[in-house]
Structure formats: structure tokens, C-alpha cells
Length: 171
Image 1 (cartoon, helix red, strand yellow):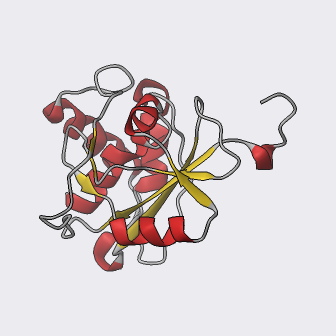
Image 2: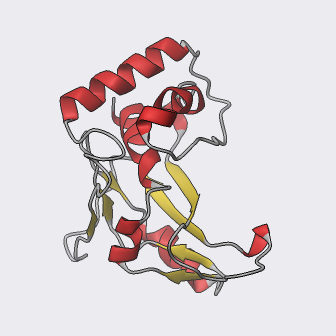
Image 3: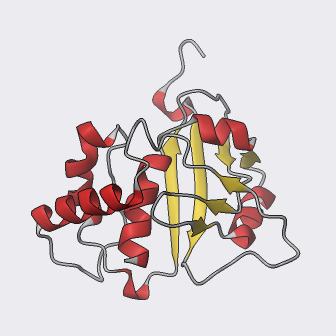
């Protein structure tokens, strides 16, 4: 790990399908738990909804169909929740069918990008299905590898965006 350049750091990626997509009945469901709920942000669905609504309202951004990318902080919500509202607040989900979520890994090293084995990302306010077809297409390029579900759950960087994505895309 010593002496790595920024381009050689640990990376993770996943694709989240629009909420209407669900894994097929033949697909074994693998749920990535909201493992940082209750510590990095509240695990109380009602309180989380209120916090997100408050931060998004305070940001007072106009939704735009032109948003193509978002860069948001991944710290605990007591530090970054308000700031993240400025990243997610202007997303108009109307014509978006897929979200690619990228984040660093603080615990797992790979020279490639790592893909989640989860079929569903769980949040206190709603679950997000993972686009398994796109995950397989990415894996087939040879530039990605899979990470174990326990490695995925130990990492917070992408999980911190999931409640906001659930809120923006599912209401």
C-alpha cells in the first residue's frame, strides 16, 4: 500500500437500476445491509426522512434534467449531510434509468475497481436494486473484480449516498 499514487488507490463501483427493476425470481437475493446506519447516520426511518427533507429544502435547488454527474461527500451525516443536499438536491430523476455509484475504499486494496456482489442495497428509507446485467458487463471487461459482501458492508463511502439516492429517486 505504501507509495501508491492517487490513480492507484482502492476503488469501488456499482450500478443502481431505477427502482422499478427487481432481480429475477431465479436470482438469489444478496442484500447489502445499511451497516453504518445507527452510527454514521440515523437508523430511524422517520428521523432520516425528516433530516433529508430538511437539508434538501434548505438547499432550495431547482431540479434539472441536465444533471449528469454528482460529486458528494461521504462523511457521517452530522458532518456532511447538509453539504450532500447541495449535490443531490437538483437531480431530476424523471428520465434517469441508471445511476453509477463510484467511491473509494478505505479498507480493501485492489489495483482494479471492485464490484459489489449485492443484488440490493438496503437503506432505512427504502431499498435500491443493483443492475446485475451492467455489473456482469463491467466484470466481463477484465478491468473489474468482485468484492465480498462483508468487505462491501465494512466500507462507508458509497453507503453514505444511498439514503439520498433512495430519497431522490423514490420520494
